[in-house]
Image (cartoon, rainbow, N blue to C red; front, side, top):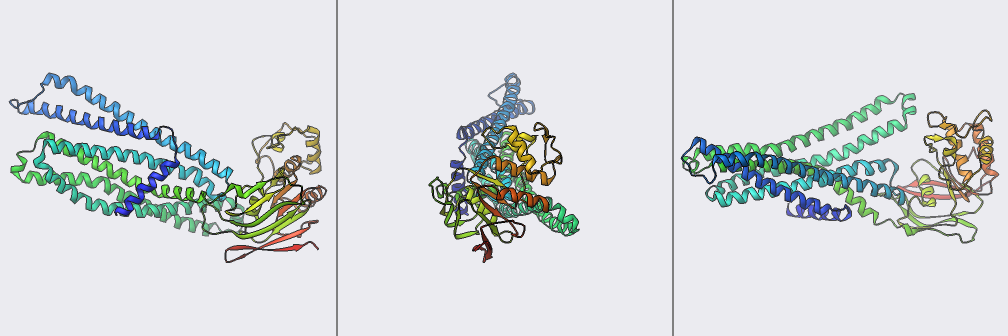
Length: 539
């Protein structure tokens, strides 16, 4: 248990170093200070209340404060307590939001700059994971303040009621036994909940991305069955989390009642029990309940903190220097040398010792089944992904890309075509390419017209992507299933235009049958999870 606790503290320390939120430590210290202040106010309120009751019930009892003073100070302390708790709550929430904001920006930068994230997991890392890590630090801050409260209340008992503290510690030890058991179960089901939550996200993504196919094949029943099973696993684990988390928070209150009942059975001891003692015991066990409730939440979010640290550890294996862009005047435009590659969230390598050379002004096609790394190869060539081992050398600064899912923004036709192009392109040249690609049935073109993915067909969006790529005047054009949304007539038109260009083309495609001309085929195959290649010259 100690080793596990020590590991957890090390993980928290390492994560804290990575989350460089301004004044983070000061905010935690501030929360601890406010927590101390709340405890002192609680002690003051308890003393005033008990003094009041003793004056009313036992008018002859000796008190250090009179009723008038109680009436003066008690409302003030209650209001001050409310203000301090409000400030503490706002401070902790502000800390969580600051961490969440910092993590989202950092992760988005990692996705953009390093790239070695699978598409399906990028949203999870940027959004969900960041939220949970931020929640962990919020809960962790509350955990510290609750622990401080427990220490202060216990210390007060030691000095004011030393004869009864022994019995309190016996009750505390008895309390720890079930809490330890519930905490262990809580952590177990947190891991299960985490994994089943990812499975649900994958199910939804698969259904949305393949909606047409699933509906046409009438396979929704099977998809629903798989989703329902994952959903049941998720809700089952969540209910178990709730059950054991609730027990963690309720057990202290239950044990409080048991403890006080046992004390009152011993009349000799009960005679020495004061109202202050009862009030402080109740407040102490309330703090214990809060501590265990937040501890359960912290355990649940700690799973995500471990995931965050895993991602950070894997990032160390990504070296941007393994990708170099330098125009050297040679006939080779892209060279992949002994490259090993895997995604950040995976232990499975896609490439091991990959070697490929692309010559200038050639048309190279990449073929092979799904999942062998055709799109990943384009990512390596373009510098979207970085090799873990080996290097990629690019002999041009002018690269463009067309995918099967072209990017369309809400804006004018001109803004969509010129997206990412910094050079000034005259409208006449834009309209010329629009006509070459037969984007519209008529030549009455207004570049200021608003367009979106709802007003354009999939074929038109694809053509806009090609026009955008050509107007950027690249030396190297990367195509990723780029004609998948075009009919046969449009495909023929596109490839005729591409053949007329004096540029290098690397084309990832399922089939070479539709191509007019190409110089070399690189055929990918999968062997034991690793992609292998065979090169063929065009006939």
